[in-house]
Image 1: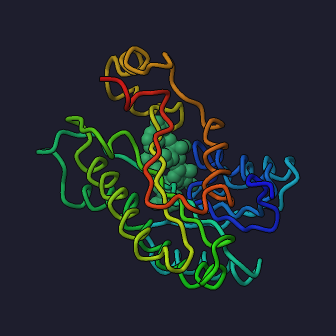
Image 2: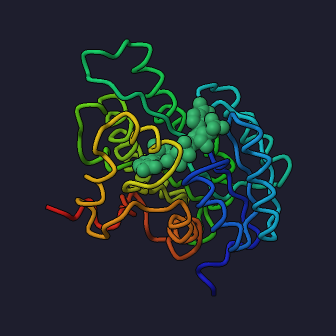
Image 3: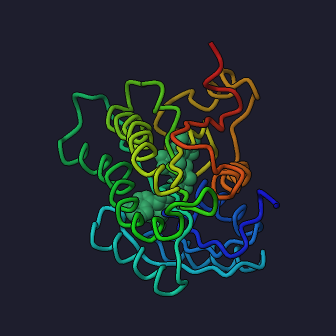
Length: 260
Ligand code: NDP
């Protein structure tokens, strides 16, 4: 058996129209998966679909705001009715509002928590029935949920109260769901990206003086990461190679979290 073959599997990636999500989608597409990407920006979505199609994948884009609970359910339902199954869900959509804790409004706090954490809960809950159908009672070929955390799942920073709360919560939610759904042969894991060059962190580099250099100095690999460096972990966590890996928290960070 090839543990890295995703032929016949169907994967949804929220926020898969750019950045880390697209890097993961490209990896899974090359491994043979059918890809459904979902996000707000349809222009980015259309471009991402053509990129995935040039890799030989069946790919589509569904417009989605992950803070809309009904739309998350619709995404799962539409995917299952179009493709007949759902094997992999990547809860990747994320945002940040960078402020000192005393400056947040409650609406801003909720916006970050709803986008990063509640959406992952809602999409996972919506995916459960379809994934259970795949995997119940078997030891392989079950459902795979891949949550995207952050170095702020582990560490804090003065400007990251809401974001760190959401990403810390992602880890604990992952562990709880992994325990609950192991009986249904659904594996739930979290990937913790280090500092990766994307739209999100381009904003951070503008807002936080000296950030770019501090990250280079602190990361043992001596550089920022790239979205395409998430292809490998995505294929591993989406495929049979990870059938006994669940509740895990896996940094992909050039050693950032290992540095004392
Ligand atoms: P990007 O800004 O490139 O990607 C974020 C994606 O999330 C976008 O494609 C965006 O789609 C989508 N998104 C945001 N809000 C919503 C929403 N309400 N509904 C639907 N989609 C939404 O940044 P990254 O690739 O860096 O971020 C991806 C994930 O990785 C996030 O969860 C982020 O927190 C996490 N991460 C990133 C790190 C980094 O260094 N880059 C480090 C640690 C974690 P659209 O444009 O269509 O809204």
